[in-house]
Each structure stands twice: as C-alpha cells, then as structure tokens.
Image 1: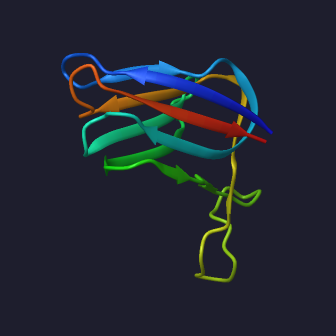
Image 2 (image 1 turned 90 degrees about the vertical axis):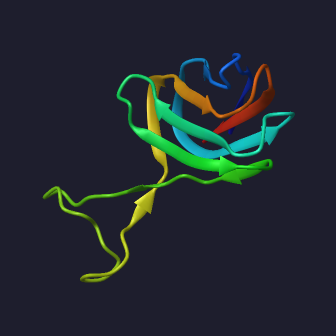
Length: 120
C-alpha cells in the first residue's frame, strides 16, 4: 500500500482545495487528521479527472478514518445485489494516473489539518 499525505490550510473564508500527486490503484481509506480546523468542517473528496465521488462528509468535528466504497454493476449495467432486492455489492474505488481532489469548507480562517489517502 501507498500513503499520500496532504497538508491543508484554509483561506480566510474557511475553504481550501488540495490534491494528491497522480496515483494509480484502489483507494483503501481516507484518513482525516484534525489539527485546528473549526468544528463542523465539510470534506468533499473526488477524482480530479472525472469528478467521481470518493467521499462527502459534512460537519466533521474530530479526526476520523473512512473506507469509501462504490456500488458495482453487472455486465448489463444494472446494480449488482447480494440477493434479489437485497443490499448493493460495493467495491473499492479505482483510479488510474489521476489525482485525488480534496475540498474543505467551513474550516475556519487560516486553520489546518491533514488528509491521508491510502491506496492499495
């Protein structure tokens, strides 16, 4: 596994946008490490090239670890389910030579934290 550590500092309006380097693999986890961001921070994590959603969390108050997964589909393009009408089958989100975009909102004026993206 590889870890991409992204230190983030907000602007006066409490927002920030940061990126990992280009990476390839399946996202294993997103680890948010609060330094002094205000409580109630919003995190939006996407693939830069396609805008695919990786993680969207609102009102985060403390450091946390997330294991984002995406629903899978059959060859016919319909949702893959564990049983008819059951729970969706989910898998890790894969990226190929892409950057992970991390957007912070409501973080406070000139506050900081770190996001670790762990890729398998």
